Amino acid sequence: MNRWHRLALVAVVALLSTYHHGKPKETGLTGVKACQDNLEQMARAVKEFSVDHNGRYPEALSELVPSYLPLIPNCPSGRDTYSEGFQIRSVELESVNLESFTVACTGSNHRDISLRENLPMFSSVFGLVPDLDPSRPFPEPVGNCGTNLEKIGNALNAYGNEHEDNYPDSLEGLVPDYLSQIPECPTAKTDSYSSGYIGRRNKAEISCRRCVMGLFRWSDFYDSPECHR
Image (spheres, rainbow, N blue to C red):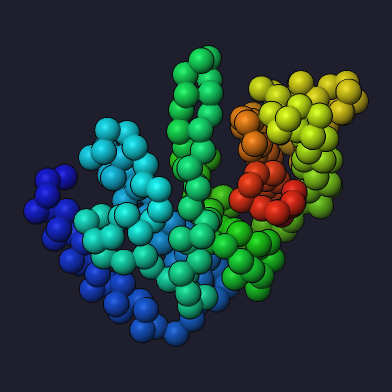
């Protein structure tokens, strides 16, 4: 996309954003979908910024304004919930340092459909969490899966406390000292957590790859481990 096309797109988005800011608050699945549209819009802007800056991500969403975004959009709940939820993460894989980013809707803005705090979010690794299709009924939380996620998260916390805030490369590093075994998701009937794990210094993230309602994250984004489901 050349500079003039981008400026034209920014101008159009600015008009749409102005219209959106004047709309009443949106709730339910409609509000979550609008929030997810905001997250995807910002994710595209972050990726465009990265292309133009030799792979570097912005340190804050405000760096995207006005060249990549006309303004930081408001969550349909009525305020900017995204700036605080922007995070850059470094992951070392096979001696190669890779960066990823997440943008989260911070706060309890969508509890009317049972979404926990700081959801929805967009991860450059996982995409939208949860990935909802408004044409389908909203899935019920899987309680036992959430319990498994919390159990693994507590084991990660214990591991980090004993290893100077370093986390294992895989969940197998928790067995047998911190977990007797990696539990199975009650829906998938298999270990669906190992593939949803990312660990690095000071931060670890685990999600169930089968039950999108389950997300356990332990990182400096939160003051303490939380299970989101």
